[in-house]
Length: 175
Image 1 (spheres, rainbow, N blue to C red):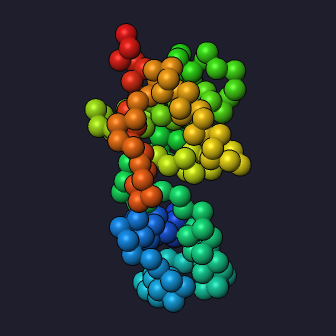
Image 2: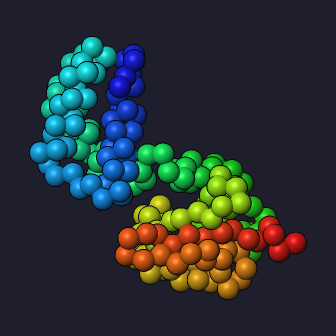
């Protein structure tokens, strides 16, 4: 809930990520439930809402956030790792690749590992494809397979229809 003005967009997106977290646990929200969630949020946030912006406009922002939210709230900080990969220089081991998207993927995977410590991290092919703006997740599957063969990553636990594959970034451990 907002505590001051100008927090609403970020908080609506956070709310959408919280819904995504519940959906990952097996709860599926239908449109009526999303409407109820929004109505509760709107009722409690009213005093902090932007003057001149209608309830319908906030509802459209909420629905857009539900559509755009890729990562559940409270999980591995995928969004933070992605932001760091985009804002920091590529790690030296990524420079061997000419394709900037493969370089970015290496940086992203390394950041995920840093954020999870010694534990494996999980990421779906579809999420990687969306982040890298690749039309096909099969391209990302090829890239991840190649990175595994090259010794950048290892599959810590294969995925299935319910869980994403877990990886460990091991390049720096190659020594």
